[in-house]
Length: 186
Image (cartoon, rainbow, N blue to C red; front, side):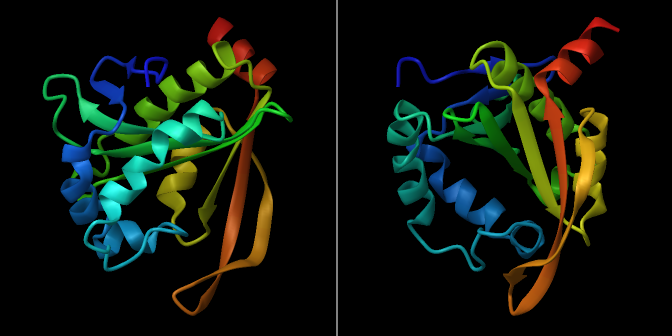
């Protein structure tokens, strides 16, 4: 994982996951509040699931299929606040960004700060053209993060997914590299 990125912001370190993060992932991601706002995180989170998930990261990054980074405070790099990821399509030069933050850390701007760093990396280093994101319509806080990043609302996919036996609308946002560059020049 020598080329696996490590990104820094004023408050955060975005780093590769370590096996020691596995039990923390299971506890934080497996909380009902986090699992409820995502499509694929199980609840309860299975024992060993964190280690299994971490074990996939290096090969997926090597194939440029996805990038998953731990969100940690710069002052305490072993602490875990959440995760941010890119599901990559290098053929089409786009990615889908996703994130979750531990509930006790909500409302502190960590998702926005981490996403800004990952978007900059995606456009400036990976050479992507488009980044998109989705959130459940009933989770407007995630949409506010997307808007703060300069992403444009593209529409709502009605009853797009089933989560815990209920249909969910998915609100879609996207940002193009030219829009990102223009925002950074202002």
